[in-house]
Image 1 (tube, rainbow, N blue to C red):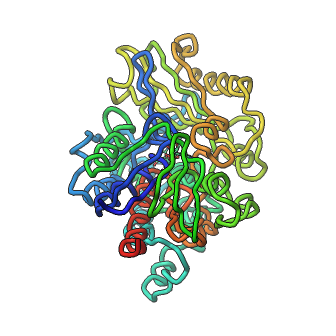
Image 2 (cartoon, protein in one colour):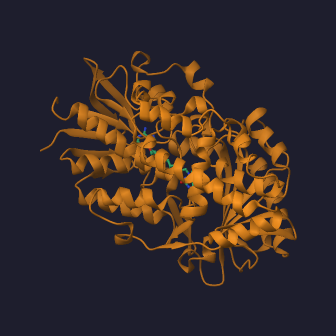
Image 3 (cartoon, rainbow, N blue to C red):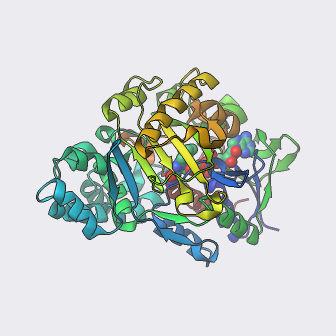
Length: 494
Ligand SMILES: Cc1cc2nc3c(=O)[nH]c(=O)nc-3n(C[C@H](O)[C@H](O)[C@H](O)COP(=O)(O)OP(=O)(O)OC[C@H]3O[C@@H](n4cnc5c(N)ncnc54)[C@H](O)[C@@H]3O)c2cc1C
């Protein structure tokens, strides 16, 4: 019997770390508070609709390939991926929308039609972005980032300088393009990182490379197919997953977690990996003397936005929508001010609609549409009431209906909303965050909350609040990096 590792939470990071450790011979148990795996990427089914609750963009397919390859598998052993074309649609007004083609030559023509010389500029932009993707995704994100010392080799310092970490993406992109619309299109992937392009290092043009060169994909059946695959692989490796078992306390003796106390029992642990929200683990599961960070530290962190979501089952088709639809039909400056500068409920928010039933007949009954509507909002907003959710529902549906040219609301046969208080209740999310910490310069690599406890010798952290950051691919990487660190440090000692 291998040494016993307890993993808290069956999100992507917890599943990844558990699988990698079980593969190394550890006896691994995941304790998950909810009734199913996936964390923020759970799904629910009702009336013939299958709703992905969180992620809908499958980017960086190479990271998923690498993940499964580590265990001698391929994503195609578990799910069928297709590349979306157009990748997505950006709606600037009722009669004004741009489809982003998957093909690079077509995208170049689209840009050239907006700005003379933009095709050539796009090629040159993508060349440097490809370099950043290579260094960023093949070297940097795999570093445990436990101290600055990891970055102090001459080669890495050279890489850091080429990665443009000190320049903002906002300034960087303006060296290539002038047209307002191209700038908006190129800044969109940066919004995934949870901060304004002004506050995001230019290194993250790697996101544009991911979007344009590597493409937007969709696993048939829905994003939850990834979770299903990871659970199957974890179980093949012998991981035990206990659902509806919330961890309530980590008992520390001689600076080690000795026991993990849950809602239904107590477990002995040789080591623990916390894949639940970092702040929750520190604040609720550990006594103050064993926490890495003070409450003051956490209050000073810049969180990525939270969101208000609507899962809608519609009993008719909505022809004008594509799979991914971004409504940029209001002023981005005002909305971003209301998210980042002066957090408040937004006056006229931009929003996003995913319609996976455009691609996948399995996620809605015949003749119906499965819609997922997402409004980014500031975290920690007070007043997440039914009234406010209804207010925003009607606001965005009015704009959606104006764009598609017909009524949708009277065809909604299933509706569920989800916002801050649900994130807190379901995931113990700090300030109701959806996507963890923003990727600002001061929250990058060794400046993020550390993946290892400074005070408890056998306690590690993984997931979107530690390195390398938020998003499905980074969460997978986080899980693998932590497993490697734990094995290196604890392997022979316990
Ligand atoms: C609405 C939304 C849309 C998104 N869209 C995308 C996208 O399109 N593409 C993309 O790449 N990323 C997207 N993301 C981000 C991505 O989903 C997350 O970064 C990722 O799922 C985080 O995984 P995790 O393992 O860090 O955390 P989580 O998924 O939160 O997993 C943590 C787990 O710990 C459990 N837990 C918490 N406390 C306890 C406890 N005390 N005891 C036991 N278990 C506990 C929770 O129930 C949960 O299952 C989106 C996120 C959201 C919310």
